[in-house]
Length: 387
Image (cartoon, rainbow, N blue to C red; front, side, top):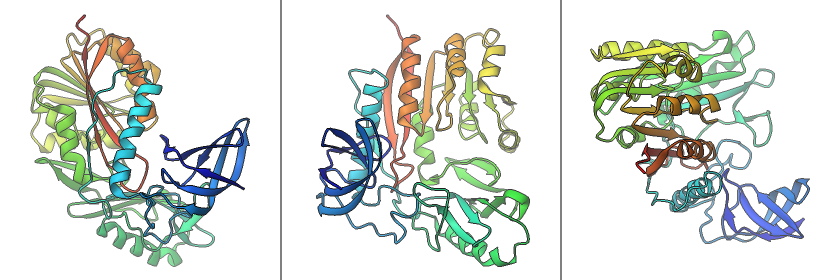
């Protein structure tokens, strides 16, 4: 065991410390903590450690309110006061943009707090151990299921659904490993492997637009922040042609269709594109179309035939855009780009390529979509470099 002081929190949520010639990454730490750690594994001069004893707690450390904290792999920031969570996330974004993206100087990065830092999560993925009938989330650092009866970040409707699923577990006749759940304005949608849990779609109204979706496809986690995120991503732009990449069920496609003469949404997931088309139809928006295709493949086939694109929005998964996707965007050369990201590291990687390809950073805004975790949503606006 080694005694260390936590210098700061790094992107990825681990604390940074140095001791005995090692760079040590400490899980579930707070900046300023003096802790005794156990080295879990070492690779050369880098070690990964867990806290054995808190010798002197940081001034920003609080007592985690969740009884599963440390065992459950879901939340890793409950030990930090909420204001510290926000400032730490901004520093994570700045670190990634500077170190990985090579962006200097960096603009100011405001962050919008979640209206609810608890009971905010309207989408969840629950794991089931069919042998023990445990229900919850993967335990930290393993594929074992941490049995969770109460989850403090779930919206009340999902907590009730969790209890309802637990009550049905003894009656299951087949194996179930994974259950998706999402809350809408009129109830809950569930989906699972083997269709043991399967319900119809739900809907949610965001900034005056109604979206239908189900647990079988993706919809965002924190619905309280979707309206300001849409506003930040789209702003006041208007024009003739807009492209919405990784469009999902059309969260951005619908408001874009009210501002542009023609909008094309691209999404590889067929369930999502079915919902996107339905949402456009229900909104009587006939100037937008949705294509079921991989983004890079569609860009390669169509970038030479679209003419001038006024605005392009991309909202890729946590892994970011593939290299061929970025190359396709650069070949298309839209006048303005809005990049919505849930991972600062992959965002910085992709921005470096876009800036090298002739774009300049206009603004960066952060949104705390995932309180009590190290994850953060970022909206970046770019324009064509004029010089």
